[in-house]
Amino acid sequence: MVHNINLKELQCGSETEMRRVYELFGCELREKPTFEYIQRYPLEQLLPSQEVDEDRMMFRNRAYNCAERIVNRVLEVYGWRYRIFGPDIENHRFTPADFKVDNYETRCIWIYQPYSPEAAGNESPGYTFLWTVSHELAHALTNDETTHLFGGQGRRQGALGIETIHPSGNGVVPPLSLADALRVLAWEDATARRQRLIVEQDYSLPVSGEDFFREYQFNVAGSVIRILCGDFATPGKIGVLPRVDCGLSIDDLNEFARNICRSTAEEMNLSMKDRLGGQ
Image (cartoon, rainbow, N blue to C red):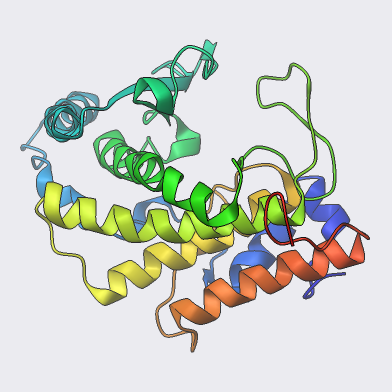
């Protein structure tokens, strides 16, 4: 048992334990899905409004096309491009990400299908697309500096101390070490801060301190879940909302996440090295 988290249940994908992690990080829990309330950044301001009597699917597609134009303009400035993995728009055929062909070295980011219900696409795929691209671009732009700090190339796939099945269903992902886990948290911290700059400077949208806290709170709690069980949580699906008035600061959230990883590694009798390639 780690910080009131049932680790074995979480490793089995328990949504109850995922909710518990979000609650530990100060989030609010509801008894129904929260997709429609979950947006943290005001990205909808960049998209058109639905016209009277406009078909919902036509509106979603029109808003998504607007988001595409914004994203393509921003990525062109940075010299990057994107590809989509996951199910198709109808949530059927699955396309895996092929990092051997397209990766950071070829200046390509992969984003999960914005239309997928798992990505909250049923509410606003345009919003999801804008958010995901800004987040994954931020990951790409902060990767080298995080690698420099941790002395080796880290990874996000896998779980702390246990083997997991590859997301494609083919093969096994080796366990994360404590150093891997701490690098993930440091990378997510740098990514959250860089994403805020992208939203403000490249999307031309101001981000309030409260909006940034909500974003950070969700991001760090979700990162801990992924580190401990090797899988993504979908907070909107399990009824979670960010909450600013939780009595925690961003520094508190970050240190709490690191302590959970350290105590879990100790409980699992893992090496306590906290840097890749060294102590």
